[in-house]
Image 1 (tube, rainbow, N blue to C red):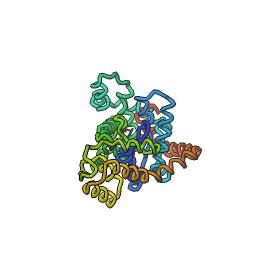
Image 2: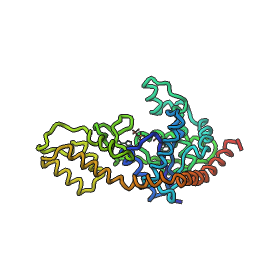
Image 3: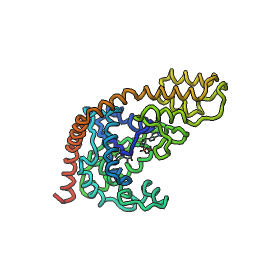
Image 4: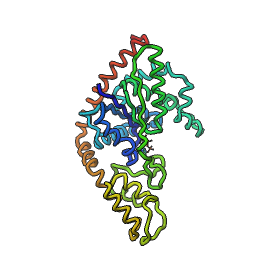
Length: 322
Ligand code: ADP
Ligand code: TRP
């Protein structure tokens, strides 16, 4: 059997070009090297989101985004976490082989405490739900950003503990950290992030996207002066999307002088707008066919459930509720 690659995205509003390069594009590419299980972690969003309409909206948007950006339901298994509620049952079994100490060491919880917040138990036990995702589907590899590495290690610990206590139920997963994927800068030069409000969204309207790109932070070098492309945020983003020739041409124009930053920003806007054009078209097509999207949601959940029900059945027997 081919390697099962497992990946999840927590729906939280608009996705940006950092999410795309850091997570979604690698996910789309992994469809070529293995059996991709890819899901929308809406139950994870509940730890911080308590508005039902927003939950529905974010979940639906995430499904449209992933389909538009190239997740192919023919090649992969794509579903929404809550459509296979066995994951909640598994979370409970796993809770009983997980020590409080292990969860107290996890970053998200520690950060919340450090900020003086009073985190709910959902946030505290978030890594157990994440372990249940990974283990329910017998995943071999879990590609994640550095921020999620610890959570995959926790999933490994829990899997080993469960297998040792009850007998072999789970594949032991391994994380894959893609070092070569750089942190994409936002329009202010910090890491692009929704929480810093410095992002360039993918599926927004033309005007606001253009406005954001035109407001990228620059220095005060005059138009006629030569400029160093390697210290420019405009160029840093441009070269992530441009071909080699396009990037070299822009770098040459920076160095030659005579090009203002406004001009460079316009070129960046045009490049990005064109880059995402086919994805926008695909998304519009999907929005016009929501019945079709609903049928994909249903068949994805059915496919996922076939694997989930086998795992949960053996777990029920091992713990003695069956
Ligand atoms: P945000 O910081 O905008 O809230 P998330 O934390 O939800 O984004 O990110 C989801 C995933 O998208 C991350 O695990 C990471 O892989 C990727 N990602 C987000 N921002 C960036 C970035 N600036 N550069 C590269 N990858 C990113
Ligand atoms: N916690 C991940 C995030 O915030 C999303 C996620 C939930 C996930 N379950 C997962 C990622 C399982 C990989 C595997 O981005």
